[in-house]
Image (cartoon, rainbow, N blue to C red):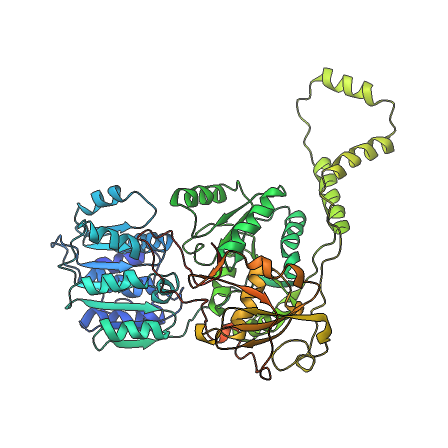
Amino acid sequence: MNTFQELGLDEKILQALNDLGISKPTEIQQEAIPFLLKSDQDFIGLAQTGTGKTAAFGLPLLQLIEHDNTTCQAIVLSPTRELAQQIAEGLKSFAKYERKLKVECVYGGAPIMNQMKKLKSKPQVVVATPGRLVDLIKRKAIDIQHLRYLVLDEADEMLNMGFKEELNVILSSTPDDKSTWLFSATMPKIIRKMVDEYMHNPHEISVKSGVEVNKNISHQYMVVKMSDKAEAIKRLMDVETDLFGVLFCRTKIDTQNIADELSRAGYAAEALHGDLSQNQRDLVMRKFKDRAINVLVATDVAARGIDVSDITHVIHHKLPDELEFYTHRSGRTARAGKKGLSIALITKGERRRLDQIERILGIEFEKKMVPTGEEIAARRVEAWSEKVLNQEVVNLPQEFRDKVQESLAVLSKEELVDKLLAMECKQLNMSDSRDINENASHTRSDRSEDGRGSSRSTSHFKNFSINIGKIDSVSKTDVLNIIQEVSGIDSADIGRVEIQQKKAIVEINKKSSPSFAGKFTGFMFDDREIKVSDGGVYTEAPASRGKGRFGGKKSYGGGGGRRSGSDHNRRRDKPRRR
C-alpha cells in the first residue's frame, strides 16, 4: 500500500493528516489522488459511502487551489445538510496549516442572508446542497465564473432525492473548461445520461466497498406482522431499559406515524425526516444528543451525517432498499470498540431478503422472540425490585421516618411488599399482552413461482386494480412494497400480482380487503393520486417476481421531479400523502 506522501501530497497536508491520525490511504484514495493531482481530465469515482471519498477528492482539491486567489475556485455538492457540514469540517481539518485557504458551507433550511454574508469573505472552496446553491446563483450571491473544479459527491443520492433539475442548472451555468469530479455509489442510467451530457471523456475508476460490518455488532431478527411492528418496538423499549438507539424506516410517512404512536404511548421518541424544517431538525437532534429521547425514528437519508456516540441499538422497521444501507444503519452502533445490537423486524415474506444480507455481508442473524406482555411485566418488576434494593438511603429526616413507620406499623412485611408491588404493576402498560411472534420457517418448495404461497385457497382472496403499470416502469416487487407500506397489511395476505400496461391487478385476503382501497386515499405516485378499485381479471400466467430489492434499485415514480429551491423538500420516489 502506498503512503500519502507517495501519492504526491504536500507537506502541510501530510502534517494535518498526521495530526488527525490518518496514516494509510484507502483504495479509492490510492486510485483517485495521484490522478486528480496530475490531470485536468474529468473524473468518475465509483465507491460506496464509508470508503474515504471525502479525502479522495478533498486532499487533491485543497492542494490544487490557488491560495492567493480569492475567487470561488471549487464547489462541492452534497445531498444533505448534515453531509455537507461533515465534508466542510473534513476539508477544514485537512487545510489546518493552509492559513490563506477558506472553506464555507451553505445549505437549505438555514437563513440565506447569513450565508450570503459568509460568501462575501471570498472562500476559495464552497460546500453546498444543490437547492441552496441554485438560490444563491439566482441572487448573484456567488460568483461561479472563475470556477475550476466542481465535485458531485453522492451523485446517485442527489438524484434519488429529486435534485435533477438543480444539478442541470448548476452544470449548465458553470464554466465549460472546469474539471468535474463525480463520486457515486452506483451508476444508474440517469447519472450516465448526465455524464454524457456534461462531462468530457471522463476517467473512470471503480473500487469495491471495502466496508466490513463491525464485528462488535450482534445481528438479530424478529418475525411479526406488519401491523404489529409498532407494538414490537414498544415491547423492546419496555424490556431494554437502557435502550438508546435509532429506528430506521424506509419512508417519511412511516417515520412520522411510528414516532407519533410511540410518543402517544408515553415513549421518548421523535422523528427525523426530510419534511421537518431546519429548526425542527436541529431541535430533535439536540434532544437526542442530550438523551432527552431514547429513540430517534429516522429515514436513511435524514440520518446521514449523524454522529452520536454510545448508541446501543439500531432497529430496522423494514429492511432497506439498498444492501449497503444495512451496513450504514447498523454501523451507527458499536463505535469506539463498544458492543452494539442491530435488530431487524421482518414479516414472513422478508425472510429471503434477510438470507441475502447474511450471504453477501458474511454475517449471521440470530432469531429472537418479541417479549410477551407477561415477560415484560416480570422483567420490569425484577428491575424495579433491584432499584429498590440498591436505593441509597441518606439524610432522611427522623420525623418523616417516625411518621411513616407509625402509619405502616399495622402491615406485615409481606403485606407491605404486596402493596408496593401493586403500585408498581399499575405503572405497567399491559393493554396488549398477546404473543405477536410469527412463524417464519419456510422452504423454497412451499412458495409459488411468483413468490406468493402456493397452498392458499383463491376463495379467500379478492382482486383489486391499482392505477400503476408497466408504463410506470414498476416491478412486482415495487407494487408489493407500495401495498405493504401504504396499507400496512402482511405479505402473507397478498396473493398474486400481475403488472399490466397501465394498471396492476393484485389479490388481497378477504379479511383485509374491506378497508384496503380506502387506505390509499390521498397517497400520490409520481404526481398523481393512487387509485384502487374492486375487481380486475388476470390475463396471463404470473411470471417470476424477478430480482429482490437488493438486486437493483427501483424508485417509485423516479427521482427527477420538480423541486423548490429549499433543500428540506425531500424525495418524492415513494408513495406520499397529499
